[in-house]
Image (tube, rainbow, N blue to C red):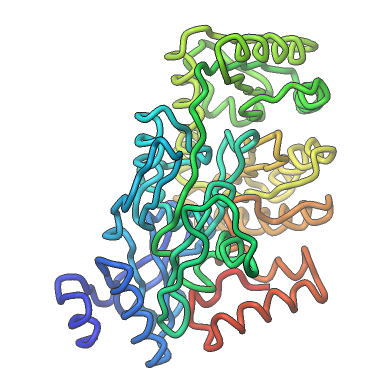
Length: 444
């Protein structure tokens, strides 16, 4: 530890610290706070030379245990001090930002300059760019605008045994070598540590118009989602919240009383285009709707998304905690995944609900945990395991955007199997031969 203190300063090393995310945590031998990419490389080099496990730590907003220290001898590397926007060229629609810059900062700078950064995961004030890249985070507007990796044109990262590497950059096209950029995106810190990235932007839409509709049951709501897709119209977002979620979080909805299965869409673009798309969305959603809300004022649309961002907190407050699984399924199996979540909860004796990105088939299946009942978490864990099996059985994925982390360890082999998992392991062995980068995560 004395050597680490010499590398980054004694004030930037904490000993025997609990580190993790919202779901899982553990104690690391040290938590190091480097102040530059070069210092990250030096710390990694020390760890690699001494066979010490390395755990990258971001804003702590993860939901799969990806930042948890599983080995008491680990050194956790916090990236919050790498918070510089190294360059921002609004007229060229690009930025270079360090790993500790928050989602909120990137979105704000883009917005203030008439630009849009597509990914909008939850907890924007906490989530950091490095973590967004590590999990390939998405959000409601990923339906139209894509996930984090779609906005990353280059990455700076520390590879074993402590080398600072840059792939891609401010250019918009590059097929010179294997796509190491894409390999790092979604790797959950198991192949190296992202220290900075080059991002692209697009011009911000002139107008955004939300449309919300509620339905009597899952079948009617999912049918409405299917009609939106079949209409050929391109909404910016296509979300759902089941009736159980609305019972827990609907009271704060800014449009008044809300019940049933809810579908949220948004039209954006130039003013005339946004209005045209909004009208087509209303037409597609109208059949079988119990209610519909389509405000004209931008402030009302912003209030809707603030409410939507707070749903997870409202659900957690119902029992004190929750366990969420962000599975993804083919769109034609969406209703089965939503109804299956409720059925699993009933079988396991735990309250269940779900919400998510309907247009992407991304279901945030959630099991409520009573913090005063130790057996409640055990029942929720069992329900989550059954839910993952359901997702695989429906031809889906055990994670859409939160990652494998700790909570879904071992499930990749059940989703992929065979040679694909062996290729996955071979890539890990090639880039991290000592298996020191975030051990125990992204396991097959």
